[in-house]
Image 1 (cartoon, helix red, strand yellow):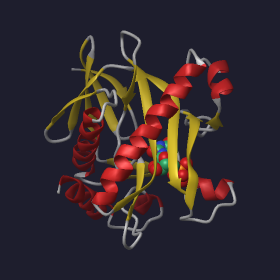
Image 2 (tube, protein in one colour; image 1 turned 45 degrees about the vertical axis):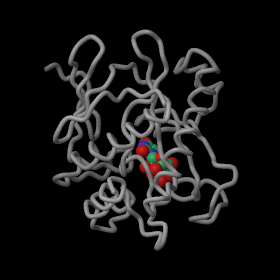
Image 3 (cartoon, helix red, strand yellow; image 1 turned 90 degrees about the horizontal axis):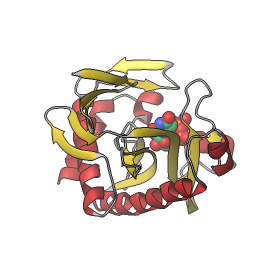
Length: 232
Ligand code: UDP
């Protein structure tokens, strides 16, 4: 199989003209790749968790690249051209948000905030708006930015409600979108504890990659707990 992309935590192989195989690796990175580790089993957990979320979203009418899960750590997905815009949605303030603005850590946000970032390690994913995205030719119309925001808010509603029933608060998350060969904008990439913040609804214990970023330990224990709860 032809490797067409090697990211920080996933490898993408070409299956045919319109399908790819995404392999979730055990690598963990933080701070634009400055902090690195490998945790055996992380790739499988993220592939399983992300598959569950993608299926839930598809069932609820969100267009996604996900086709099927393949044991132990792979997704078959529609081939897309990834848009170099990260869409971040925040329900509670934490992380970079409390370093940039005067919010208290853990403060609930009203309204829920959607931010766009330029997907670039070289420029450290700076925040952008519709005009910057257009001027950088990341998207071809302002409508596409609106569409990404609209889908992101719908994803937020679906996932927040689902997770809360499992005793998990969806604090924030990052989405990526792509264009299919016939020009449709669909949700791509992954939705996992590497790309979301999850807090235990009772104790507010951290259940995501912040355990690695902050050196809190027991990273995989909490990824496993997220998987256990969402499969209940
Ligand atoms: N995020 C991500 N990839 C990035 C940047 C952010 O998956 O390149 C996710 C991150 O896991 C969190 C949310 O987006 O769930 C908001 O991240 P934030 O901007 O607070 O960044 P950080 O504090 O991680 O620098």
